[in-house]
Amino acid sequence: MIPSYDPNDTEAGLKLLEDLTSNAEAIQEQVLHEILSQNSGTQYLRAFLDGESDNNQQSFKNKVPVVNYDDIKPFIQRISDGESSDIVSAQPITELLTSSGTSAGKPKLMPSTAKELDRKTFFYSMLVPVMNKYVNGLDEGKGMYLLFIKPEIKTPSGLMARPVLTSYYKSQHFRKRPFNKYNVYTSPDQTILCQDSKQSMYCQLLCGLVQRAHVLRVGAVFASAFLRAVKFLEDHYKELCADIRTGTITSWITDSACRDSVLSILEGPNQELADEIESDCAEKSWEGILRRLWPKAKYVEVIVTGSMAQYIPTLEFYSGGLPLVSTMYASSECYFGINLNPLCDPSNVSYTLLPNMAYFEFLPVDDKSHEEIHFASHFNTEDDDGIKEDLIVDLVNVEVGRYYEIVITTFTGLYRYRVGDILKVTGFYNKAPQFRFVERRNVVLSIDTDKTSEEDLLNAVTQAKLNHLQQPTSLLLTEYTSYADTSSIPGHYVLFWELKPRYNNDLPKLHDKTMEKCCSEVEDRLDYVYRRCRNKDKSIGPLEIRVVSLGTFDLLMDFCVSQGSSVNQYKTPRCVKSGGALEILDSRVTGRFFSQRVPQWEPLGLDS
Image 1 (tube, helix red, strand yellow):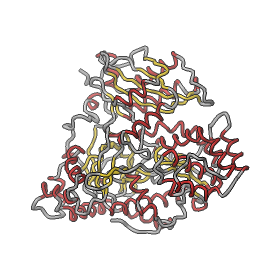
Image 2 (image 1 turned 180 degrees about the vertical axis):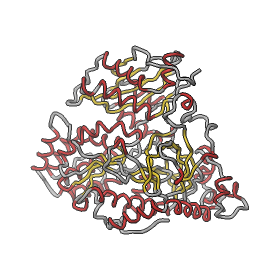
Image 3 (image 1 turned 60 degrees about the vertical axis):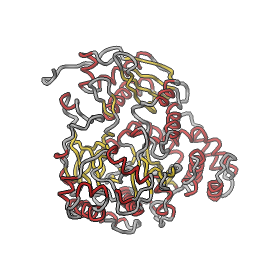
Image 4 (image 1 turned 90 degrees about the horizontal axis):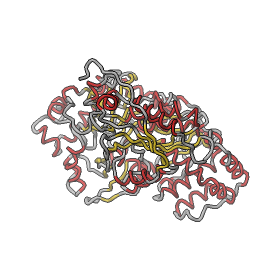
C-alpha cells in the first residue's frame, strides 16, 4: 500500500499519481482488506465481528458502528495507561498524536505506529512532482519553510503524546531524510527542532535572510503561523540585520545547537546584505515585503483553506503578487489528499484524496443551498441523531456538489471514525474525487435555533471587510474570532476584530458609522434562521463588534499554547468559549459597536 519511487524523478511521481487516482476503487478495497486482515483480532473489532472472516468487508460496514472520539476515547485511554496495543491495533502503538487543542477544546489522542511514518513520508514525497509540474527550476534553490516543534508529554504507559508535525520532524524519517534536490530548506534541522519557539523563529528567519539569494519559495504550515513570522520579522529586523552585519548571533539565543548551526551559515560579517535588508524593512509600508526580501521567490506555500481563508487578503498584501499555494490536506488522524492544481486561486483549492492512505467513507450532510428546513439540523454538534448511517457512501460514490462529513478507517486503529471535517465534492481526477474543505463540524455560533457555521461567518466577515473597511478606511482586518454572549436577554453575537492601518503602524482610527455598517453587513450576510431570529422572533440581539488592540491575538495564541495547543498546528479559534481566552480579548477592547438596524428577512413557504 506504500509504493516506492525516487522523489527526484518527477515523471515517475506523476505516473504514480495517475495510477493511484485511476484505480481508486480497487485500491480502496485493497486498503480495507489489509486493515481487516491485520486487525480483525483486536479487542475492538472482535466485539463487532466475532466469528466473521478476517476480510469480510460487508460485515464490517454492517456491524462496525460509525463513531465519534468520545466513543473510542476509553480504548485509547487504556493504551495510554499502559495496556496492550492490541486493544485497537495488531501493530504496536509507538506514540499518541495530539489533535489541535483549538478544534475540540482540548487535545484528543490518536494512536500511531512506526509504519505510519512511512506512509506520511510517501505522502510528502507526492507533493514534489505536482509542484515541479507547474513551477520550473525548484531544484536550483531552497525553500524558506518555517517549521516548529512542541515538547512531548509522556503518558503513564511511557508512550509519548505529541502533535503530528512534531512527531514527523523528530522522527528519523525527517532527520535522516535522503537528499532531495527539489526540497532543500534554508533552516538547519537544529533550528526546527529547537524547543524554544522564539529562538527557533529568530534563527530560522536569520537563516532565510542570509540565504535570500537562493530562496525560491517561502512558507509555513498554516497561513496564521506564516503571518506571525512576518510580524516577528517586523519587530526584530533591526536585531537580525545587526547579526548579519557583524556575522554573530544575539546573546539571547542560548540553544547551543541553534547557535552553532546558524553561525555556520552566517560565515562572517556581511555589511552589504544587512544594509539591503534593513533598507527594505525600514520602508513605510510593508506591502509586497516578501517579494522585496526574497526577490527570487516563486510562491508562498501555506494552508489557506477552511478558517485559514480569512488570512488571504493579508497574505496578498505582504506577498506582492506571489501565488498562494495550499498543497495538502492532513490531520492528526490521517493524511488525506493533495492539491493537484497548486497555482489555482486560493478560493478554488480542492484536494484529491489519495486512496492508499486510509479507507474513506462519507456521511452526507444537508445541502447548504437549502434554507431553514435544513438549517435546523445542519452541522449539529450536540446531537447526532440526524445522521443516517445507512446513507454513508464509499470514496468513489460521492456526488459532485454534495457536502459530506469524512469518516476514516486507518491502519493505526481508528475504525469508521468521524473526523469532524465537512467537505464539498468539486469534481473527480480520474476516478478519485476532489474535495473543497468547508469547515470543522464543531465550530458554530448559536443563541436560539440559529446555527452559524465557520464558513457562513467567514463569508459574512469577508463581505463586511470588503464593503466597509478596505476602500474607505484602508484598514486591514488581521484577525477575528467570535463569542455567543448569553449574559443578557436576548443574547447576541460578539465579534472580536483586530484592525491594522494598511500603510503604517499607527493606532487605527475607528469611525462609529463605518463600524456600525460592518455590524449590519455581517448580519445581512448571515443565514435565514439567524435573520428570522433577529427580525421576527426577536430572540437574538444586535450583533456587536469589539475592536481589540494590536497584538491581542498573539496573546490569545500564547494562552492557547499554554493550555496544550501546538505552536505548529495552532489555528485561531473562530469561536471562543473558555474564560481565559475571553478575559484576554475583553481586557484589550478599544471600541465597541453595535448593529443599528435589524437585517432584512422574508418568510419562506416552509416557515411556520
